[in-house]
Every structure is written in C-alpha cells, then in structure tokens.
Amino acid sequence: MRHVIALVVLLGVAQVASPQWTLETSGVNVTLRGVSAASDTIVWVSGSRATVFHTTDAGQTWKPMPVPDVPATTDFRDVDAVGPDAAYLLAIGNGEASRIYKTVDGGAHWDAQFLNKDPDVFLDAMTFADANHGVVIGDSIDGQFFIMKTDDGKTWARIPPDVLPPALPNEGAFAASGTNIAYLGSDVWIGTGASTISRVLHSADRGKTWTVANTPIPANASSGIFSIAFRDAKHGVVVGGDYRKEAEAVDNLATTSDGGKTWTLAKEHALSGFRSVVAYMPHAKTATLIAIGPQGADLSTDDGMTWVPFGTEGFHTFSFAPSGAMGWGAGNRGKIGRLLFSAEPPVVNR
Image 1 (cartoon, rainbow, N blue to C red):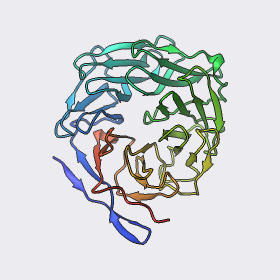
Image 2: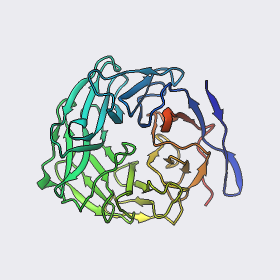
Image 3: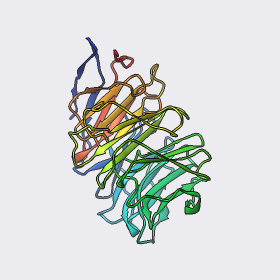
Image 4: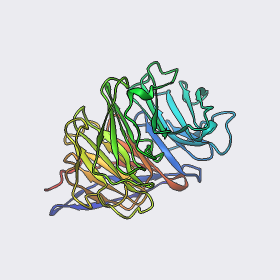
C-alpha cells in the first residue's frame, strides 16, 4: 500500500513547495542500488540476490524479470534503460561474478553479453549515451584502469591501458549507485576514489583517448567521488564523501565549468550528508540538481552553487525520467520512491 510523504522546506526567507516522495511497495527485502527510468511509466530496478524487476504503470505494480541460470547470490548493482523495452544489467563481484546482460523485449529474455573469466576483474558501474554506445568501469588492475566499451550495443572490448592514464594505488570507482560515469554525446567522464586523491577521467571521443584531472574531493579506502553528472559538455558536478560516515558532509561536492579540466570545491557542508548519487533534472528552466544518499536528499536550482535539504527519505541511487516530470529512488530493504515536484522547482534565494 502506498503512502505519500509531503515535504515543505524553507528556502531563503520564504516557504515554497518542495519535491514529494511517494513510497512504493516493491515486494522484495533486498538492497537495491540500480534504478533507471525509461519513461514516466517504465522503470527498471536491480539489486542483490539476483533481483531485477520493472514497472510499466508508474509504480502501481512491479513485476520480477529474473535472469535465468544465474546464482542466487548475484548482485545486480546497475541497470540502464535505453528504450521502452531495452535495458542493460550489470552484475558485480570478483571474477565470474562480473557480468553484463541485455534485454530488448522488456525482460522476457536476457542475452549474456559479457561473462567475465578473469579472476582479477571486478566491474563497478556502467552508463550509455544511447542504445549502442556504452562504457563500463571496473577496479584498476596492476596500476592500470579497467574500462570496457561497446559501440554496437552487442559486443564489449577493453580499452587498451596504454591510451589511459595510469591508475593511482588502489584507485577505482565505487560500486555504489551506478552513477560514477557520465556519457553525453561523445564525452565520457568517470569519477574515482579509494586512493589518495579523487580524480575525473575524461574522453571526448567515445573512449579513444583520455585525460585525467585532480579534484579537491578527499579520498581514502572508503571515500571519494561516488557520482558524476553533466548537463552539457562544460558544466558538471561530482558528489561523494565517506560511506562509513553517512551523516558527514565535508568537502564532498565540486563543480566544473570547463568540461572537467578543473574542479572547484563547494563550501563546507554544502550538502547535508554523504551523497551516493547526483542528477540533473531534464528540461528544467533552471539548472536543477538532486543529490541523494542513504540518509537524505538535497536540492539545488542554481547549478550546484547552493543547496537545501528536503525530506527525511534516503536512497542509494536515483534516476530522473527523460521527461524530467518525475524521478525514482531505490535503497535498502527493497525501498523504492517516486519523486514529484508540485510545480516548477523553486529557485533558491542566494
């Protein structure tokens, strides 16, 4: 049974309507870390214990779309819709646990596109520019980044390490929300962490050549960049922090206006906690962003310059519908939330 949580926040000196979460009944009690909205009505969700399901009626009902012949322990950490009936599914883990599947018929059948055999490979996240062009990041191996791409929507090939910058010790991408890669046009950006500094890898030619830039986001084994989003080829945001310190928000937000060449740290505590996902609202009149973590969410309507917290709900991951009319969050214990704005998102008074 659904219940709606109405939220009102104070922006500047005036009270305005804020986003509202509607909690859905998923029917599962697992950790969900993958969500992707194909439209206002079609949404995919994935998680632990080989869980994958979707709705075609905006969350009124959720239908399991199991992948046959996979272990019950399979962790489907990321899912990406690329059409009304097409979606990619990423399983993470050491060695053979890392896999990529695709459906083109709404989950009735799944094609195993990549079944890893290398014991050193651990896939983390993926993203797509369209149905045929995608990028997958895994943990670095022997000081080299492990990145694969597809340019036909069917086959996957590793990007040669010699065209990539060397990885720092232990540097990689967190398998947290599936959103530490952004793919826009021919540009790909990947946020890293878990080393001594957080960095952003960038390719302007669909993965043929790469550069890397340092960011001011601190990093260690449990901290760094967890999510990256771009609204165009120049303007982007990274968020993160330390997942072991979810209530803290210290130096965990940075922005760029030059395509990721340089990054500017936001003021301390710009966000209200650790954030595992950040997303631009499509078609908004202002550059509107949502940043969400397990303990809460924040809203910006000025391209990440200022933020306000809203509500008490938290999720691991989030996806706006392509129309921008709504978004979907997924989190612990099978929790799914639909986010609606009562009107055009409010402009933050600065």
